[in-house]
Structure formats: C-alpha cells, structure tokens
Amino acid sequence: MREETLLPAGWGWASIGDVTAASKEKVEPADAGGAPYLGLEHIEANSGQVIGCGDANDVKSTKSTFLADDVLYGKLRPYLNKTCIPGFEGICSTDILVFRRHEYLDNRFLRYVLSSKGCVEFATQRSNGINLPRVSFKVLAEYEFGLPPLNEQRRIVARIEELTARSRRAREALEAVPPLLDKLRQSILAAAFPGRLTADWRKRNKDVEPASELLKRIRTERRQRWEEAELAKLRAKGKEPKNDRWKQKYKEPVPIDPAGLPELPEGWCWISLDEVSWDSQYGTSVKCDYEAPGSPVLRIPNVAGNRLWLEDLKRSVYELSIQDGGELRPGDFLIVRTNGSRDLIGRAAAILVPLSEPSFFASYLIRYRIVGIRGLHQWISLIWQCGAIRRDLERLAATSAGQYNVSLSKLSKIAVPLPPAGEFLELVSRCSTTLESIASESSRVGALLENLERTSESILAKAFRGELVPQDPNDEPAPVLLARIRAQRDAAEAEAKQARQKKKPSRSSRLRDLKNERGSDRNRKDAKSAKKEKEDPMIDPHPS
Image (cartoon, rainbow, N blue to C red):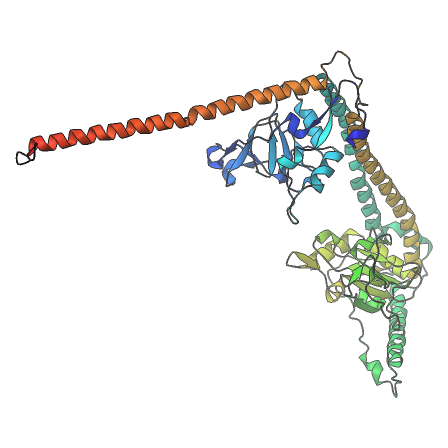
C-alpha cells in the first residue's frame, strides 16, 4: 500500500488525474478525411503494439481524435490491458481514452504506468458493467503511483525499452520452436501412417500374421465383449434370458471400402473405429461443479495433447451409477465431438491406466471401448494424431450456431490403417519415445515463455520501485514537477474560463442590452404612429 512504501529520493506520490486528463476532442468520421481508425481490436493486449487499423470512411458515430504521440487506453474490459502510443494521427473508438503529451510528463512512462499490474487490477476491480465492464476516467484518475523526476522518467523508459527489446527477441526465438516441434511430430506420424517408419522391421519379419487375420480375431472378440456386456445389463435388471434371441440385437460393423484410399504395405488393411470397438456412446449430461459431491466427470479441457489432464476436474452434482460398468477404464478412447473451435474437434486420448476413482465423461465427448488386443488402443491413439485423419475429421465436422460437431456415424466413416499386431507394437514403441521427447521440449518452451511474461512484469515492478536505473540528485524533484503540472493546468483552466466569459455576456450587460432593445422598440413605435397621422387627414391630432 502507499503508506507502507518508501519512495526513492526525488520521487513523489501522484495520481493519474494529477498528471494528465482525457482529451475531449471529438469528430464525425465523415469530417476526418479518411484518417486511420483504431478500435480496441487493433491494439494487442499487454504488448502495447498496434496490430492494424481501419478507415474513418468505414465507421459511423462520433469518434475521438488522437495524435501520433498520444497515449491510448482501452477502458472497455480493462483487464485486457490494451494501451499504446500509435505513432500516427487518426480517430479512435470512444471506448479508448486519449491522453495528450505535455512537456512535464514523458507519455511513454505514462503508458507503462497504465499497463502496470497494479493499475490493471485497480481499473478491473472498479469497472462497471457485467457483460461489458468499463472504467471511467473519473475512477482511473484516482490511481496513485510513484512519480520520478522527468529526466529519470526518460532513463526508466529507455531501460525498459532496452530490456523489452531483448525479451521480444527471446520470445520470437522461443515462439518459433513449437511450430518446428509440431512439424517434426507430424513428419514422424506421417512416416508411421503408411508404414515407412517400419520398413526395416518388415524386411526382418516376413512371416507375421497379416492384419486381415488379426481383424477376424478382433471381430470375434468384439462380439464376445458385446454379449458379455449385454448379458450383464439384463441380469442387473433381474431378467435372465430364456434363449439366445437377445443376441440378434448385435450389429456387425460395416467394413471400410478401400477404393480411393492410399495403398498400404503388404499385410496391412483399412479399418474403422466401429470395427475395433465393442461399444461406443455419448457422455453424461449431468450437471457438474468443482465443489459437487459426486464422481469426477471428464470434460473437453481434460483431453489435450493426446493425453488426459486430471488437474482440472469437475464432479457430478449427484453420484452416478457404476453398475453397468459405465465408468472410464483402460482401453477406452475419448474423442471431443463438439466445440466452437474446429481445431478442437476430434481431439482424443486413450486411457492407459486405471483412474484413481470411478470417473465418467461429459456429453461433449464420445467414448469407444477398444477390444482387448494388446497395444491396439495405443496404436489407435497414436495414428489418430496424423494429418490425414485430421483432414478427414475437419471435412466431416458439421457446423451449426457457431458450433462444430462430429457424430458417431461420421466417425465410423474415417479410415484407419491397421498393421499386423507385431508391427503396430513396434510403431507404438518407436513413436512414443520420440513424441514424448517432443512433448517434453514443448512444455519446456512453454515454461520459458511464461518466465518471460513474469520477467516483463518484474521489470515494470522494479521501475516503479526506483530500482531499474540510478537516481540523479541533480534532477528536478517530482514535487516541483507536480507543481509545474498543476500550474500549467490551472493556467489552462483560467484561460478556458476567460474564453467562456467572453462568449457569454454578464448579467448586467445582458440587462443593458435588453433595455436598449426595448427603447429602440418604443422609438420605432412612436415614429410609426406619427407617420400614420400625417398620411390620414381624417384623424384629429388634438381630439377634445
């Protein structure tokens, strides 16, 4: 808090309202002569970068004007931290406050004050509105900060910009890594998809069981697992079957038509998810909450990066039944079926080990229960990440009301390559080690980027504590600077008041003008009467 903070020598406490005021200059877009237009969408959050602009001819309603070195501050959703110094003149949205530059304050320093963590939190906590929270200048003006001497402001800005430039170069280098890692990951998967990755393995293992024979065994187990599950359901309801008619409900999977599909290595075949899973279904629509007492329910955020993330779990508001074996178990394959982002459709993960407690999955997910051939669910999970299947998913996804959706029936149309059992185990082994290394490196890059973000916040925090650059005792102290700012503001206000008084006459002058106007009216009336008497001889000027 302010009262607990000791400012460096030469500094003084100031509020935003002490050092600046929001410009009130407005203009109609039609009168702006095609000037550049800045909306909040043209200012990048946190960075202070202008990432585009519009044209005054394309917008309507009154706008604010700004100059090249003004500070622009987004007052709508202040937590987005949208501030900038544009570097060019133009007009902007009225949801942007404009602060003019003046000689006693470095506007670059002001921008850093406005984008500091303390100011962002202050504005966010005091904004009004639920869906569209805004902070007014009257409220923002109350934010207090340590004001250095003007020369020190300039030194601080120079140092911040130097360190920010280094940070930006480091960020650009780090941000170039994830696309390269993803490219490497896709190249590995692309080599696994048609069997190029295990060409040497096939040369050494020519007498293995082909995938077509493996598929026969999968179909046999598929039916057996379905019958076991169906029989358990009937008995749970107290219905012991008297004959085998209930088995007629079993539906054989529709095989994939290989016509038009890429050629596979000898011994491979094409399959669908339906052929290798004995059950598939949508998740529960039960309401969930973090503090609810029921079982964990996995949602879309829990399925990412081809794995499960169990750190962010919600629970059902009441306990879900597990009598029918509906809880998640190893061998289950979860797929995101609906989302507002096309990129998230089809994102999937296999459950490899038992979960710590009985858990379920939400209705935005689809579960396939893969038959129990060793390593098969891992192969499905691995190959599901490759670009060819990704393209099929995006092609089949339907869109409605801004949501993308892929159904069970459409997922069953996606062709998946199936190698012989020994070969897909070899592929899983070879790919997993490399992909885990790529994932680890990607996480490390993400952590470094987060550290850079914290470093930027630390730089500003040091700047506002006076620890970023040394103080110079020869600098004019901030209290003197504040006195100059106040004097300049008072002079401007006095000049404005005088200008208003010149435009608006005093009460005495208005009364004098009214009196003169009435006298002129009487004179004009007397003159008119005299003229009329002279023109009409029948009127007696001296009636008795």
